[in-house]
Length: 249
Image (cartoon, rainbow, N blue to C red; front, side):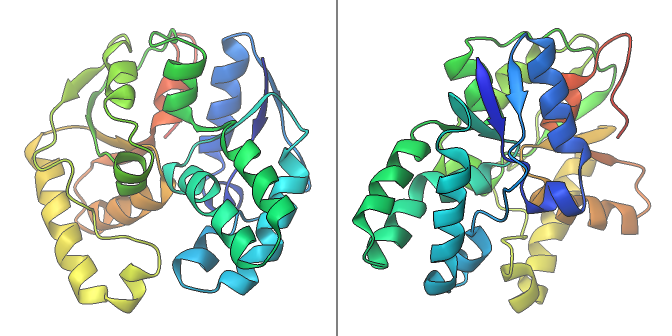
């Protein structure tokens, strides 16, 4: 299958290891991955903070870049896929562009978060990964509530050789990031993060994983400040790891 990679803003600017691992994993499974070089922000930040007029040209550009790029598109981010799937057509219709809205709906139906693509489209849960660490999984809000990926990431993690999966208490509770929420409501965000970190630490895991680098950035920053020794590693990096070559955290 020909798959277009949506690298995401955070992947491009701060955490390139997640999109790189996504490519390595999918190519190992025998698929062709293409990277449309003209891609930019999907507009999630603008939409979520109410700047819909500014989001419209970003939506139009995203649709133009990805519509004919491949059979499907994938992003190592539940929040970005949530924006493409649930917000792009709405932004286009609000801007009075019905043709763009229909094109956005077509692309949305072919855009997947990584665990969705692997389990639902490619029909695989054992990707041949090896990751000999004790790991706990945080289900991010957009993947859990917007995309409803359910237990797909857990099903993938359970098949990773050498990995010990620990249950995260109150896993479905938000970590407190929420994009600009963490800036505008810093005290509340910090309190939510403290609860999440306490739950992560209670599992005695070496690694906390998730499907969004944004949440991992938030949780990882807190764990680093505590000097806890617990790392945050994107799901794609774990799934891309093999006995021959463990993808570095």
